[in-house]
Structure formats: structure tokens, C-alpha cells
Amino acid sequence: MQPAIFERVVVKNSPVYQYMKVSLVLEHVQTKLTAVELKHLITTGLKSLYGEVGAAFPFDLLTFEEDTLTAVLRVYSRGLVRLWSSLTLLGFFQQQRCAFRVLQVSPYLLSLTGNSRDLTLD
Amino acid sequence: MFSHLEKTPRTLLVCERSHLDHEDARLGRHVEQHSFNHQLSLLVPGCDRLPAELDAALKGMRSFLLVRDLPLARLLEEDFIDQAVHKGSTYGLSYRTRIDEDNCYALLPNGKLVLSVDKDTYEVLGLEGKPSQYQRRPAGRYVVSVDLKDKTMSPGGRGHQRVLKALTEHTPLSCDLLLSQHLPGGEGPALQSLLSNHKLSEHRPRVSSRVMTSLPCPTLATSDLQGERRSCDPQSFLEWLGAVDAGVSFEEDRSGGYLSTYQCPQPQTLVDAAVRCGVSGLLLPEDIYSLVDVLRRSVLEPKLAPWLALTVHGFQDSPVSWGTAEHGFLSGGENFYTLVLFQNLDYWICMATGSHDACPP
Image 1 (cartoon, one colour):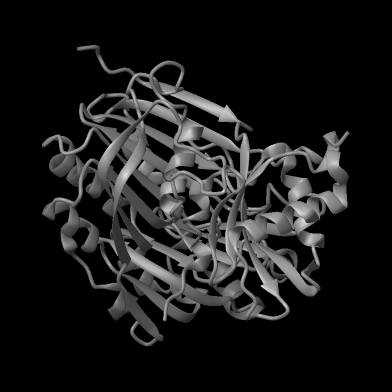
Image 2 (cartoon, rainbow over the protein chains, first blue to last red):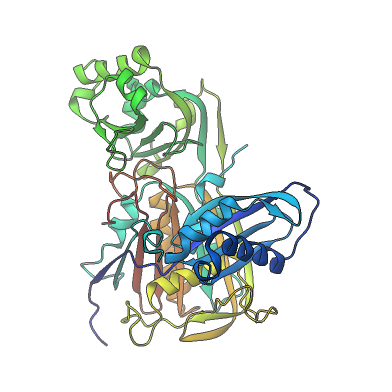
């Protein structure tokens, strides 16, 4: 059996991806939309702000809750600022006003599931 | 073309590997120094239920107190210093305060009271502090650290009088405070009796669990920490753990890859069942370290699983992360560590911090 050793590695500025937890607020709260419609909405917003070339980077819709219209997005680190800014400036969905609330942004997906700001004690 | 928009804040990930019984293993020190833990998440692949001892340990984590509108000057009174600061380890953290917007306060187990305050509060308070490392020009936040165990802070001492005057006359600071205490041997009065004339409530950590079936798991090799040969790299592994916690589906995407291209990192194996258990509240390092012993006895030594992963999240709004290192919040306040324990008692620990944090120890 190999003797156990001690090894330490420090990795700086490594994350390839950034993760965003966002929720969509619509003017008519009873409006429902699917995950595909949400992704299409975000892609449209990216293209309208940055054009076809500027919006030519992939992002993933990892989770989507239809009840709360909350989603977790994954984007390459180099595309974070463009995606975040296009979410900020997105104002309409099918002729009704809408707004994206960016709830949390992190280079670690794990961090999105352990947010102490959600701690509520009666 | 967009190079100026492609920068992201600095992040740090420190990974260590060793053996639980190795003389250079620093696992205990890392767990001990991470004082304010909000949530732990345990994943055991290859099991469809947790052993009874482990289940009892998770459900039996000690309760904590929430004290409403507690004046900070109360922490300087003689009975509190004698019975809560000098005896055992007392942990206190302001509740529902945001480190990037509000004044935040923390009582560390080594007796240090840390006040992270805005500029106006600092100027009125009149105590000596340092500008925050993360808001220097202009200085918008200051950190004041008071060592309650120092001899000048004994009741009646010069330092004690100065701090007490600042907290009662200059600007009476108060907050809702989360409190918990570890007393070796179970001696001494409970915090409830010390603070009985304040509005307080006791809370138990919330426990949740679920069982997953047909879960693709990355293959891990204990000697390949950096994922160069037989294992996946730490960043991909942490991403996979986050995906499991967040409930990301690993089934084939019906939209043909339009929604998401995420997949379990390679190399991978498919496990029939896995248990994921979460505990949230104010969790003490002593309880977490005891949990590691229980995991060793109940899961690893009986060889119930090839490995297990324990992730411990720190409070995003804590003034400190590891030890007394200042912690801040930019676009996120992540400070967590993931402990991977293997059947042969080797372990990996991956400590992650955000941009407004020092390097983990």
C-alpha cells in the first residue's frame, strides 16, 4: 500500500463557468411559460443588445421552476457580463412588461444551493 | 471585440489531500477555523438509506438561539464574559444583516468580538479599527476587533470601560443575534439563563433528505487530486455536486440539447441509489468534526460507499471566513468547503472563496 502523502493545490481564477440564479417577474402574474420559451426570451435579449456576433456564446438553462419562474443559468465566465447586462435590460415578453431579478451569481454551482440569505426563522 | 467585458472577479480554490490519520493532516484545523456554518450537505452514493447512527447524528445537531434586539453592550457584562466567553466556545452572528449594506457583528469562539460597520457608525463609535480590505478608496467600511479575553477587557479595566462607553453612550448598537455554545463536559449555565430577560427563541437545525436513483457519479481516484489521469478535476466535481444539490436532471434533454448541454463529468459510473441529506441553521465546527468521526465509523469502515461528500457552507454575510480573515460580499459571499472521504480513509478537502476573501488556510 502506498504511504499517504500530504498534497496541496491552490487554483486561482479557475472557474470556466459562472452560475446565475434568476427569476422572471411578469406584468400579468398568471402568465405561464415553458423552459424553452424562457431560453428563447433570454437569447432574443442577448441578440438585441449585442447583435448576432456578440450573442454568439452558449449558456445553459440548468433548472427551471414553472411556479416561481426561477431558473439557474450556466454561462462561460467570458460571457457573464454580457448575459447579466442583457437580463437587466430585457423589458418585454410577448407585449407585456417583464423584469429579470438576478438573485445570486457565483462561480460555484454549489454556492447557489447554500445561500444563508434565505435563512428564515420564525 | 468584447475583451473588456470578459473579466470576472477573482476566485480561489484550495484543494488538499491526505489521510485521516496522517500526522500532517490539517482537516481538524480547517474545520475548527471555519466558525460560522450555515448549511451542510451530505451525499452518500451507493446507499438508499443512511445508517441509524449517522441519521441520529444529523438529527441530533445542537440547537441554537435567536435573541432579538440584543444590545451589544450586554456581551461586555461581567456575567456574560465569565460564563459564555471564558468557559467553552460561544459563537454569535448577527441575523439578517448584509455585509455589503448593513453593520454586521460576530462573536468568535476565541473571545473576539468583530464589528464590521459603515463609515458613519465607525466615526461615531470612536473605537480603533481598520478600513475594510475590500472597500479602501474611498473607505466605506471599517472592521473593529475587540478581544474580550484580553486582560484590559476585564470588567472595570480601561479597555473595557472605553468599549462599554462606546456601545452605550456614543452609539448604542443592537441586533438580532444567532448564538450557540460548545461547553466541554457540559458544565456551566446555558445561554438561555444568561439572556433570559431578552426576547429569545430556540431553534433546531432543519434536516431534509432525499434518495436519488440511477445517478451518474464521477469516478474519483484518491491519488489524482487534480484530475489528470483517472479522476475528474475538482472544479468539475464541485459543479456536479452543485448540480445534484440543485436538482439538475441528468436525463437526456428532450429539447435535443437546446436547453442545456450539461453532463456528468467523465469518467463516470452509474449508481443505483444515492442519499442526499441537508442540515441548515447555525452549525458549530465541533458538531461537524464529530460528524466526520460518525461518517468514518458508520459508512467508511463498513464500506457502505466508495466515497462520500460533505459540503459545509459558511454564512455569506459573516464578517470573517476562516479564522479572523476578513470576509466580504461582491456578487456573492461564497465561503464553503467540500470534504470527500474515501473508503481507505484518504480525504480531499476543497475550500472555495469568492473575490472579497483571503486565501483559505
